Image (tube, rainbow, N blue to C red; front, side):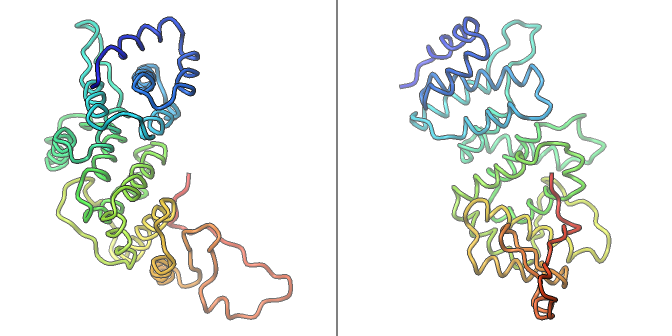
Length: 300
């Protein structure tokens, strides 16, 4: 059974060894309880020392979501204890890590804790904007994980459209991995999520009654472009997760072709090619077809 001693030992180790030595211990420590505590401690430390580019957060997210040689019950206990750490002194800030909270919800989406946190986020979005308390109830990485990894699978296509809205991404000013990697994890570990997203590649209406990341107001006549953007985001994410078959790819490509009749923008890097009418035109010898960036495609 899990015991608390490793946490105190890691804290002492951190003070004696220093940050760089602790990171070296993490890289060589394996998937043990002691090493998990080291990663959690490093994540908490980085959240208080400033990490404006999200580099330390990304490192901690990938480390914490990697397989651990720890029983699930013990693993959940460790994360829950890390989420509820006490202040070292009454005047001290609460020691917390947004990444630790997010990874708990990602690894244990059916837990009471994760479901309660999703409900809190839903309640916040459900309020009128003028009635919401200042600031968001969670960080971006926590909100994205709760939406993509804890919410029902059949809501995912709608949430992809809402969250990958270009205006919302610009306002967030967050690294793109915070939006893509939680969704890839859901697709990889939840067959129902992969099936639902694959079915949505035909551009069907995905409207749902949920306040989470409420749909931003769009201009009349942009429905097809919005559907194409959603389909591209879903197809690209399915491809990154290894779940985009040839038939699904062709279905998505047909939707994209309707939105832009001159080119077919296939999510796979190697599959860009013109639409059939463009391919049928004769080309001069040595003439090459070059891919132009889609006006709706967002890249970082």
